[in-house]
Image (cartoon, rainbow, N blue to C red):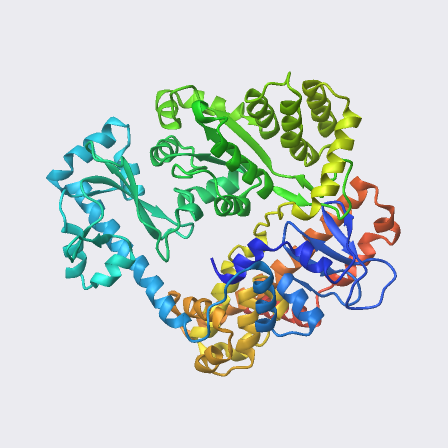
Length: 610
């Protein structure tokens, strides 16, 4: 994750813009008088789900939190980056240090890939790996899954991997930094993993960040993970996410299980939207990964541990992470956010894990998924099962733990029903609960926890933008053609800033020097990107196609925002928004510029000449 993505993950664009503009709720979004031009009717909108803003009035400007701060404060990108990084608590890389660290990070990934290849080869071919193959066969793991997930085997040796990687040219210090070897008493080093089934753990980009290793005998611990390294943080990764992210987007649902074998069994049965937290309580970083892909999350919990404190803490974190700020004014329970995500809980049959359920009866597993309990119902059961509601102090505890959750239910009728249910459980009327909670909110407001902000769709990668920039960077002869591009074509912050710098730098060397250090990694990745071999004319055609498609993407984004506002205005009955016809208001922003029309016409002419 780049520092830009991390900042967007930690900050809410609504909070950032609210420091400068008095925003008012408008459907799922916020509106205000545009701060960049004079107007009487609000045409400035902030879209929290997209992490973007846009003025549909005369100035027609828009962008993300970075572009807003730059425009409002009169800052350049580097200044805005530092201001927002400081606000988000994100540490920026000191100038001059990034090159060495980038090289080290890439080296660690390469070492892990080499280790995964070595372990996988042994699992498939080594006689010593028979026990590992038998274990997988006994768990019903197919050959296809073994190969697809690159499962492996570490031999019962003190230095087999170490010697193999040293022979490949890697250094002792590098192996130590990757967490593959550890120091021995008396000096030297040895392999960390011995006689274990090896499970490569890949990040969402598909690169091996670390390993999980299952003992094949009575060795303790049964499962051993790579230590934390510069590229591996167990709390910030989900096993199987590289394989599952497409299915999660497609199905609109992520299912989180606990273990590696649960994921393998699910994917083998075609349930590819399943990932694992690897035995830990759900973390903020893991929830953030899921939130980029879907707002629908189902957790599979062991019935024996379903109500313990660690489980409840993980669920509370997920609840907070899926909540969104909706209004600056408290509602009747004092809440300033609503639970927009659909969080559900699977309670597994006692004594069974998902792996067993799926292997024994895939249809039974699907029923558990379909019948998963809403999070609020689960919390009611988990909280009240640990209390004696005949005691006044336990009634107070139940109200204190459940009222915050009830206040964040989006649907008003549903919220009222749960409040009535709680009132019945604790034996007081609903008004008393409201008053009690409002008083607690007033006295504890300053101590209240900060809302967890999550990355918006704008933090996702933009492949077409990056391909276009790779063409321009790797083929200087295309510079004159690239002048037809507009900064507004680039939705990605890094891409837009790199393009703006490229326009004023005749060489890559000058571009590198002029760029903020925190964009160097992105520049390098685009320069290293492998492009298909082609003639100069073919490159020109490819760039022209990029220009056309990027322009079309921009218009589609504006059209989608227009339709969203019209739909919400009609559904919310927002007469203030409809007062000046939305279609007329937005048509100004949707009229393609002369440059854009020229791009389309040139694209058509070039296409006709092919």
